[in-house]
Structure formats: C-alpha cells, structure tokens
Image 1 (spheres, rainbow, N blue to C red):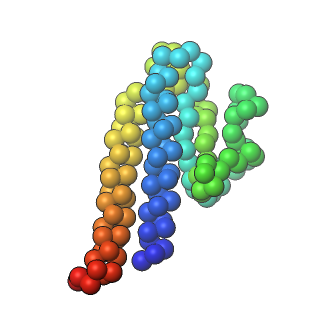
Image 2: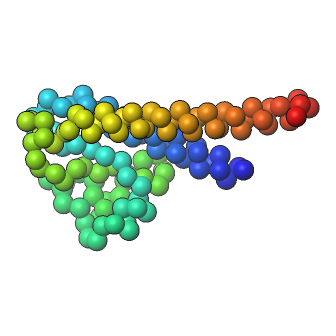
Image 3: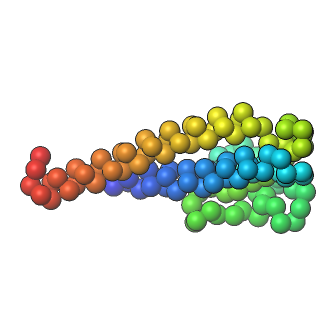
Length: 129
C-alpha cells in the first residue's frame, strides 16, 4: 500500500506542476510569440521521441537537456507547433481549459485517496477498525 501512496504523491506533484503550466499558458494567450508549454513524463517521452526536440531558443528544454521538475519523472517542454491558434500564439484556450478540468479532477481523486489512506492509519492507531 505504501508504494501506491508514493505513486499518488508523485501524481499529485506532477498535477500541481501541470496546473501551474496550464495556468501560465492561459494567462499568456494574448502574449505575442509566447510558446505553449507542457509537462510530460520522461519515460513516455523517451519511448515516443527519436532524437532531440527542436527548440527556438537555447534556453528551451529539449530531450537533450532534460529538466527534472522537482526531481520527479516528468519534464517541461515547449510545444513545437508554430500555428497561431489563438491568432497571436500557439495556445488553444479550449484545449488548455479541457486539460485544466482533467487535471483538477485527477488532483481531487489523488488527494482524496491519500487522505483516506492516512485516515485509515489514524483509525488503526487509535484502536478503531
């Protein structure tokens, strides 16, 4: 059970970072030349990408320059899509809002599961069933 809790804690950490990135994308929908950011799991990225990511700035993170966010198994990447979806940059407000809703639901689920686990431990310590 402790391994499951650790996985949930890692998921919560990832979701917090994902929420911050989505909020930043939404806040910059009107910023000219802003590049949409995303957070991806490193192992999924390594499986799906052959070669390095193309970046437009040396400060951008790519697969050749992995950036561990909080020491976890995910990293920040810039969306390589150059289409001006919003008319100004590549941020699609519908996609961002959809991902934000999904992230919020997953966060609520994970925090509830972790809370339930610790409540059960507390109950056992107090002698309850």
